[in-house]
Amino acid sequence: MTLLVCSIAVAFFGFYAWLATPVSVDVATGYRFDWPDETANYFWIHYYAKTGQLVVEEPLNLVADNQIHPRSFNVRPDGSLVPGSFLGLILFYGWITKLLGSWIILYLTPFFGVLGVLAFYGIIRRIFDDRVGLLTAVLVFLHPAWWYYSATTLLPNVTFLSLVAAGAYFLYRREMLNFLSALSSGLAFGLALSVRPAEIIWVGLVFLISVGYGWKHNRSVVLLVVTVAAAGLAFLPTLYWQQLIYGDLLTTGYDQLTVAQTSGCQACAVAQSLFTPFGLHPNLIGHNLYLHYFRRLWWYVLLMLFGLAVFLANPGQQKSRRIGYLLFGLAISLLLAVYYGSWEFTDQLTVNLNTLGISYVRYFLPLYILPIPFIAAGLISTFRYLARQWATLFLLLILAGVGYLSAQLVLYQKADSLIPVRQRVAEYRVTAAAVYEETEADSVIITVRKDKLFFPDRKVIHTFEALSRNALLQEITPRLTEQVPVYYYALGPEPQLTYDRFSLEVVAQFGSEVLYRVIL
Image 1 (spheres, one colour):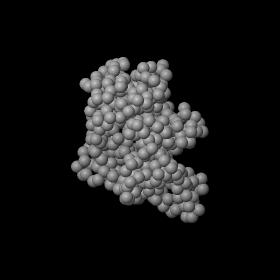
Image 2 (cartoon, helix red, strand yellow; image 1 turned 120 degrees about the horizontal axis):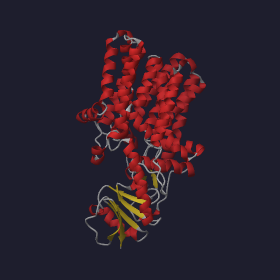
Image 3 (cartoon, helix red, strand yellow; image 1 turned 135 degrees about the vertical axis):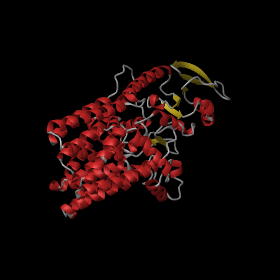
Image 4 (cartoon, one colour; image 1 turned 45 degrees about the vertical axis):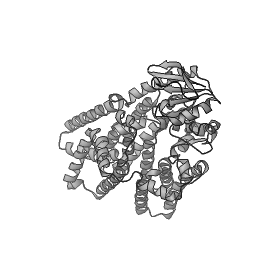
């Protein structure tokens, strides 16, 4: 059974990796991404692997009021650029890239996506049985959210969950619990927390349950100390770099540095970020769960309800470890639903255009994955009353239907589906190459949402509104133009071309988008 699961995993890794590979475009640009977070993570992983640093000096920010940076970056008061996210993924992938080369960066998340499913299979087969474990693995591989974010290679959520699953797995395999298992578990949990420290509450719960289970079956103080020490050791680099680049052990890239450095109670801010970062808004929680959980992935929801109904109606299936898993899953789901469901996404363009690509989906990943073993158990329990050939046929038909609906959503159906994204990113590279032909290497490009096209080959200032409506950019543009060439890349023709101290001159047009040069 394990060999079959591994063979399926290899096939899915190949598919995920193909989707992560950019469309070949014969232009002289590096990789481009549809997410600003991916653009930032790729830059910092590559830069850290090459230089061992996480700070980029930017002297021009002294005259640009620290506006020169792409999205998902942060700027220190001295104008230097630093990561604008949690550091764990950058450090972890950066270490691997140092060893294997930059070619590996795009394929690490597909690899960990597959590894996480294998770890989850190893846990579920012990809680339920081998058949439930196998079907669970297939259903996770086919789940639109897992599929989508395994192929969206530089977002942290799939790797984070895979590390959590691996940490739990190494302690749950009680028949092989030894020094290596304890060490591996601790390192996996520590790396997971460094990738997403905001999840410390529920990951800490998983860690305690896993350690408690390991202690119950192997009362070794040495193994307990090894697990805890390894987790702390894996998290230390994150603390070191946060102190070094943000000036505080507890400050992350998501904090505004000017606020973080003047805060009177940094510990209070951290506590709020861990428990109630978005407040508590029941109506918003209900709306977000309905839209991003029940409505958009309705076929998995129907199967989940069916599987839970079968489980609750069958006392013979309700063994203590399965009830414990159900209660654990409900607790984690409730915590995450309240935590992220209370968050209101403010970028209406993203809300209107994105489906799987909206951030709620990746934050709700555990809510999608945890109930899947009950889907598998419910289907297997129901089909056991049929002849073997009929049971197999019906199961294959259900998997085909699930795969078809998932593939439509993941690959084709929406603007943020993976195939349109791949084509859009290829177009980004063509546009970027054309803009590079028109601009100097030391120039700065002011862009409306298009910073991901031009960075890092050009310095960028990103804005969400047109230059004609941004008083701050109108103020700094002439000062900056005195130092270097400055261009403005607009989503459409700019209604105002003349300002108090500068004017705009059309350089080139790319469809409806226009490149202007700033003239003093």
